[in-house]
Length: 423
Image 1 (cartoon, rainbow, N blue to C red):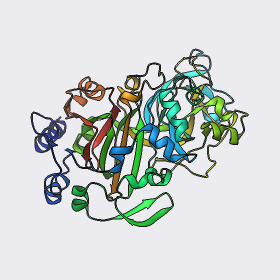
Image 2: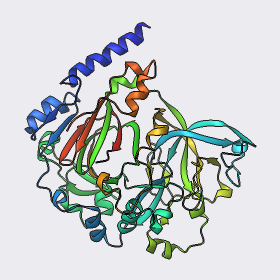
Image 3: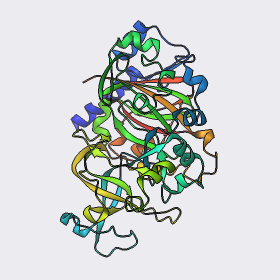
Image 4: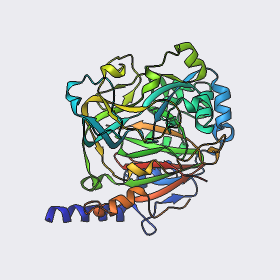
């Protein structure tokens, strides 16, 4: 108990150190001087929201879904697809009893308890799809489009690939975002070598610039990153729930067996690859690196059909669309935060999507990463879940909304949960 009390006191002391204005996030109306940013925020590992840091970037003036679709042409981009909007997340899954045999020919329906064990918690990756940007736009904004229907029952697309996705997959518009990032950050972090999926490209700037596009159905589950982040919101609003690294004892982080979503009918489809690519619905495999981060690869470790893989049921029971969402079991375990609120959080704003109906709450975010080894709501689903837990009550979360034209500096190792906010 003495240790628990000391950890709780440390968490409160840290909150007093970085939080201001009755626990709210510090917001700056204009970019700070690089030396001020370095001294007051980077060195103190203190998040801050900065306005006016990238108003002159071309992406702020030009970018929309229509513009990105027109400029990117037939180039393929990587889209994460899930049946519930929750990629890279811990969720309940129904394991067949014969999972250990690794020769399950088909997954069992959740309504059929015969031969099925009790539900278990798994860390589940999304299915990765290769689509044109036009196909992604259609899937995101028009529920009647072939691309949306190809996502299966309640399928949710989210453009959220890591590993320098802007420069790797959006070369036609990559120059609209300066690789050096906001001026105040460049002055504080200094120059570094930018990396691409093929390795170092020799240019200066942040190591990765990632483009994320999604709507209110997508939620990024609570996690932490071992690198500095700058989230620049170009359209819409993102809501972040943040916890400092010292809250680690209170967030229920533990190892989980891994799985990956798969739309069963697509993998077994007889549609030719060329026709699927033309429709913007070509699926692809994913490999898991030793760090547990999903990345495109030529590996065929689990590029298998249903009869060769171990399956679990993750169906939501909907009969809309085509196919059946299942989860394939992967080898190994991964440490992740088990926030039980995630089981319901992904359903926020998850109703039927009409043509263009999501445009008011879609967000386009450029995430600039440098590797190192406005009004706030008082609550969020994660905050409520922590409050309901005896241990979680000792955590010190803060919720902040980052609007278009604002930038959030998120120090390395801070826990964060991210969702898009409907206008």
